[in-house]
Structure formats: structure tokens, C-alpha cells
Length: 442
Image 1: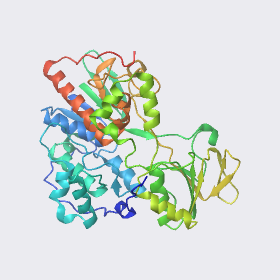
Image 2: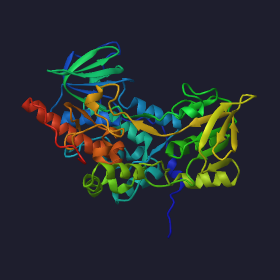
Image 3: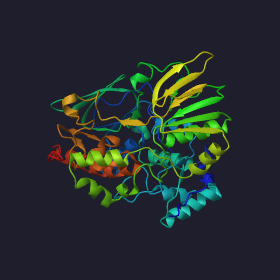
Image 4: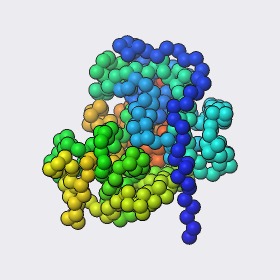
């Protein structure tokens, strides 16, 4: 079998270009507060929250408050990307925040409108996308497109900076309490995304990491000469290549016996209707199995030549099939990892890229509303609302046991948003929450 491996130059793309933007109305002042009541409150302004707010605009639902911890739509999303030095997305052009079923400017349209600002490589990728082939999207283009959506769908003027503390269902409304204000809504959509997966307590006894250890979404201190990266996914690959570019020696600890390279972080069949049908047609136990098999860490093919070359040159040492047992500071300021095999790996700094876990509403909603089972919320299949509270819905990774492994991806956001926005619009018109259906797999 012949495997085609894309060239690493596809990973490079300019960042920070000036993009023409339509005039935008002023965003709310940071110290201001929204109206105490709204038709819809969207919790989280990442790509999922942006998609929901844009879809509601198309449905004519304008009394919307978007609450986000940064106060900037997609601010946390791009902040994490830039911290990693990531320049292209794994998702292709057809996957983007937006609205299905409406005549909207899509990501490929937007990129073509700004053809003169693109590099020759970026233009070639657009031609690949137009021909139906896999392509990579520059982060810079995606950022500008999200800003375009924010302006044209009036999302910025509805976004408020605050940290949501709890979501409390009541007889007449669902109240969202933040650290700055409260809003009573007829419907709430949770788009909190995912949080970094914590390290096992056995690695250092729990609590804050020891000196010289950080997570992937934190900056690496200056002066590091030997960096250790723990993890097997795309984030780990970005951390490794960034460290190599900085001239550091890198040790890579991978629990699996070999790296997994693939175009998308889940099997591409789950992006298509037949893939979702495959997921719909089985019960709970089978869905859990599919999620465990197809929601695994992997790396874009473009990294393979870079990492293999660095390993051959001795700049990268890969410890395959090794599980971490303990991490502890050592004399002289270094950090030592003790592996299951008994081997030890030392470095100036250790970065943990252990993946993420979906935020399913636990800690915000009452436990009886989340009704968690095997770490997943109990959701209605049609509307993605909580079965025990149809006035609250979710979009994003938390919908994985309904939409399958692709729920966490931008394409999954589009599918979820289509269902959620239509259900909310119907509810607001009728004044009655869409009832839940039967529990899956029972």
C-alpha cells in the first residue's frame, strides 16, 4: 500500500495580516451589564457559541446575550492556538462556524474574496478545496472569517465578559448567574468547549504541578534547553516542533507503541450523514465503544517528515510504549520522569499534553439535570437539550453521545447548531419548550 504524506511546508502560513473588515457597532464596555432578561443566553463565545449566535440571527432571534470569560468571540480559541504557534487548522474549508440551510458567506467564499492577500501555497489549497480534495486552512484566514461573522451577525455587540457560576432552572425562566451579573432567559445554550485533562494524582500526589512542569495551554519559561513533552496528539506535535525550532533538545513520551498520523482527529466518515447514521443506529454500549476507538489522539500527516527527520538527527528522542509513573524535581533544577519500564527521562522543563475532557454542564447545572452517565449528559436526540430541562441545550463536545466523535469538531458544531437553533426558534414562537424524546439505548 502506498501512503501519500503531505509536505511540511503546508504547516507554515503568515499570521497577523491586516484584513478588510466591515464597520462594526461598538461592543459592550467591559464594566457594563446586559439586560436582566433575554430570550436566549449563549454560554461561551468560541467557534460553537459563534455558530449558535449566528444561526439564531438567521432565525430572527435577536434578543440574545452571549457570555464569555474573555469577552471576545473566539478569543480563548485563538489565544490557545497562538500559544502553540499553530498556523493552519486541521479542519478543511467546508468545516467552519456558520449556518447550514441559509445563503451565507462561507469560509471558502471568504478566502476567495481575499485572494490577493494569500500566499501561493494558500491559493493552491483553495483550488484543492474547490476540486473536492483535502486542504488545510490558514489560522489567519479562519480568524478573519470569524471576525467577519461576528460583525455581519451582530455578535460582538451581544457579547459580555463574565465567568458563569451557575445555571439555575426556575418555573418561568432559566437564570444564568455570573461573577458580575445575572440574566433570566427563556432558553440557554451551553457552549463551554473542553478543558485540559488533569494529570493522574499518582504522578506527583495531586494538586498543582511541581516546579518545572506545566500544561500545554501555559507558556514555557525562557532558558529551557531540554524539553520533555508527554502526549500523543496534535498539540504535542506543535509543542515539539516549536521546541525544535527554538533549538532545544526534545524528549517525547508516547504511551502508545507508535504515533498515529491521520488527516482529521476523528475518522472522516463521521463528518458525513452516513457516519452519523452509523452512530444513530446503535445503542449506548456500542456508542461508547465507537467513541473510545475513534476519538483517539492523532497527528496531521504534515508533521511526519519533520518529526522523523528530527529523530534521525538526534534532536528528538521518542520514548514509545512508555507510561509515566511519577514526575518529580531533581537536584540542579531538572525534572525527572520515572516510566513504567523503570527508565528515567530528565529535562529542564516538562509540558503535559494529555488531551481534553468535554464540559458537560456539571458544576453549572444541578446534577439531576445533567443526569450524567459514563461521563456524558442525558440529551434529547432531536434538539440536544437536556432531557430533564428542555430549556437548556448544548453544542460542542458534550453532544458526543448523540452526534458521535465529530461533535467536538467545527463540522459537528454546524450539525448541532442546525438542530438547536431551529428548536429554540420554534419554542420561542410557540412559547412551549420542545419535549424530549426517548432515552437512547434503553
